[in-house]
Image (cartoon, rainbow, N blue to C red):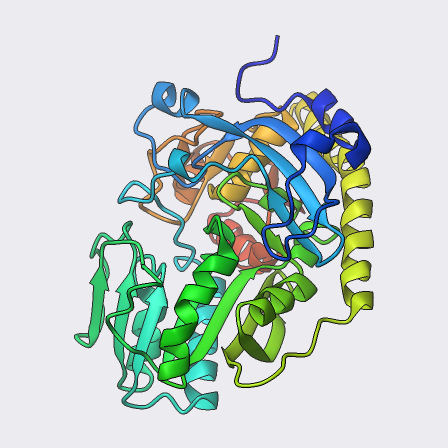
Length: 407
């Protein structure tokens, strides 16, 4: 019998039904308001807060679950979880999703900060970051241009050394009450967590218009989640999945003109730079919307096959009597263990704040990479190809000759 946290894969197949079969369960699009959304995938039970730190296996195994019901709007290319309930999530000091302990990710953040400072002439300016985490990116933006930074995040713990010019409030940012005017407003990997993104941006627009400021947004790229190499980014806290077309359309409807749109971090992230529009806004070409819609449908239809291939790889490793480890204990790892109904012999993470904690759902303990030396794995699974080189280097430094498999 399956434990409660494991996805019932029969529900995945049954989720691929036409809208006509479930008309009462598909609401109008949150972005464009059009009816006629298509149900792509449905997962009835996944951990709700996949970035929470749990102090025991029992606590982690009993962590709350929720359902994903992913609906595509063919009119604008937006995908959302229509079962999302914001009241079930808590963003506090127990929320931990920092990635900047990775040298590769730290390099990416520094390069991004330098790029924004240089291109936008951010010298002696004010920067507002929404959902700043522990402030590392805001600190880089301020240090690089002698700027003043104002961050907002209820999970902030003040455990990093930040420039004196950075102030962080441990509260959610209210776009309707912007006390501090900035020259740059940024929100990295925040917009996909906001239940009503159009309303949020519409409320933020007056402050950006008044100061002639730039808005920088970064989200997981829908193109990478649906049909790319980021399939395990299907997590409950993400109410929204934005394609390039959907994100540009959202900004246009909120009264912004898009200046630049990029794929970053190996194409896994989608970034957009915008300013308050003062005139008509060009619509997103229909061919771009239709192209992503076809991609998302195809990715949904192939998900069973992809998951089964990964399951077979894990099973073969175990059948051969080989030890396996999963490197990385973030949201993708939680989804990976839940969707595959499989366990590995060890889970490690370089983030010291995660060590000794337990993953929600599976209750798997998180160890430091150094512990692998005591019982070296022969196969190490990783969930993001961008970290492969540094992981291989760290394994070699510990004299661990393991096969590194990107799944």
